[in-house]
Length: 253
Image (tube, rainbow, N blue to C red):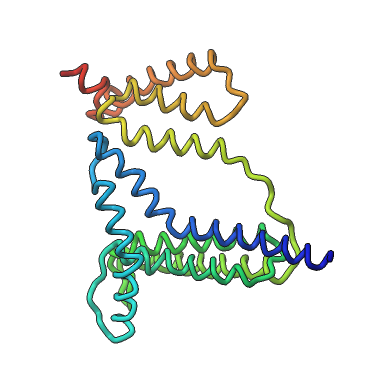
């Protein structure tokens, strides 16, 4: 019975890790979808949510498999950015997620860390795929990203393999609250800087980031946020000479 319970617990852990890898595989698509919501309110530029959703779903389910089959058949037609993202980044992570279900992980920390490193390298390879020197033996702006990306993939694979072959620590507890609110703060600043201006956006972004910990003292946070906002209002337009709006559009009009 103890063996059965141990096997069940291991299977549950592997399933959780595999689900996490599946979310990692579509993280860039999810980020662009969330980012595109701002276009509805006139925040930022780019494709709308419906276009992003349809484009990525089509690339993942139809266009990328067709491009892969065509490449095997000798078709050299250049694929779109969404298709390349699926082929270079998402599909390899999906494969890893499926294989994870059947593996015995001895060191979850090493295994997951290695896969995350591989994911970063694959994303970098996709992001630089349009640069000259990314294919064949030609040299160009993409030569260094290709070399370092390949080395990071190999390094990540080696670390993940260590997690499968040698005993090591389990995953340590990770506090998501801090990184989550910091990322939300950064995204909010990027989306709101044009319609709301530096003063409102900087102050609101600082308060959003301050929500990342239970230890925040809000009186002190508001005072520090006001001082930082004043610093940004002086730094960007006057010291750096950047033509950034100071106040919301509706006030300026």
